[in-house]
Image 1 (cartoon, rainbow, N blue to C red):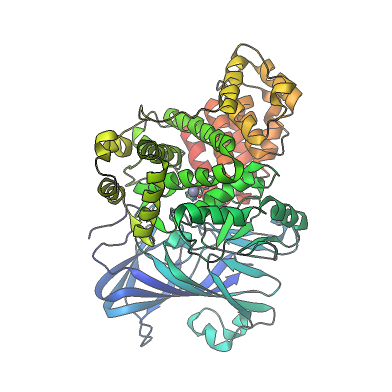
Image 2: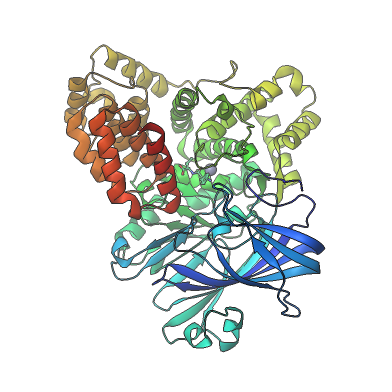
Length: 614
Ligand code: BES
Ligand code: ZN
């Protein structure tokens, strides 16, 4: 038994899954999916095949040719990180058929009641599988080392529609025949009058963490030749605002193709989720998922789309082999994102983003000062929950490393290298050494110019990292410095500032300031009430750590209206870590009241923050 991934029970000596066929019956009343999964392996296998699962109840596993049950066992107590190992005894089969149901607490799924949606009349469900949650939707070898193609038959209530990270094949009425593998379910239920079936197929092989769907009362607007934006159809204003915000998407795809090679996924649709979506964006292929908080009519919406689009090359085409090499995904993507932003929004905005990233990276060094392992690009994650150590390090130190190479060889040579790297490893999952070997082979002598080992295996920020410079960046940093001497920026100085400028300014203020000065800043510029969540949250963090108790109401309101983990992490950490008894109590109370509105992954992350400090 040799694991290939610290977060998976998959064994390196077993054949990997190449295809999954899912039949899913979504029961919104019970927040449960009754399902069958037909797994096809790369070759026939005899022996004990290991799969990952989490809170899944398996009824039987069959040989699909003979329908004879196969022996299987599920580990009696789940591993707190990896979940439950499923072992199936095979005798030369290359396919297995698993009949099972998910749990209402499945970590990848958030089931929203009608009241939690915009329309207030229909329920909604969506997935978030990265990093290791696909296993709570279907038993699988849940490691990015295994690339799968898939098809799905999804039975849903007829007022709703479904979208997936896959090609939509058709919407049709259910057929009696199809219910036979869902033995808990009668064909009458499958074919009930108020049900409809949506079919999808994903023909490009993807790592399981890119499996995604959402089901609700959805509508869309066309925004480009290969792009629609989807959201709840009742949220007409959201759809209209999103269509405007993302109007430049086709231009970004074209720029991406110029820089990195063909766009291989045909469609690039966008789905704007309800406010509880735990991330800013998620690069699900063909259907990127976005938080509604990015729609605010400035450059940030396009920045998040540029990031998720960039993953179409770095991450989705070339994938990290496991989470210990996550920087290969996010570091390259952050670099690629900034290249796209530079072309479509200009170098100043790209530099501003670099500056926000640089500040974030430096702050992470403080967060991990007692756990230096997570300041390394390549790090050990045995026994570590990837959601707990999620940080800016793979993004921003990864970005710095890629930029360091670019600066060494020059743009022209680096662009050529990048295209070749992507073309060479597309649809593969690789590790850091594979990248370094390719780098050394294609840029001979690079290891003499850059300390590659220090960058990939060393702790902290290497000396030859690059702090961005631009007029606006330098100006904002010096204004933030002046705040320490009691000087507030003037109306003139901030006249042109949008969200990103304010964010950079606030993030560069001392962690804790004189309370009266913080209140005065807000009185003048109304930051706590900003519609821009980055600004609002940066300000509230400062207010909490500066002991300005008057903002507790706004903090509570914010934590009860959005579920993006970036904001939850920031505000709950500020309350629990820097706050006194009153703030700690407030954190506990807010979490108790808001918990059910958060995605299960976010619930877990907040729980671990509170248990660390309270
Ligand atoms: N793939 C990530 C989101 C993610 C990472 C989900 C790890 C689960 C585990 C996505 O591409 C991302 O980085 N999103 C950022 C957006 C940003 C950098 C523009 C986010 O959500 O903040
Ligand atoms: Zn990303």
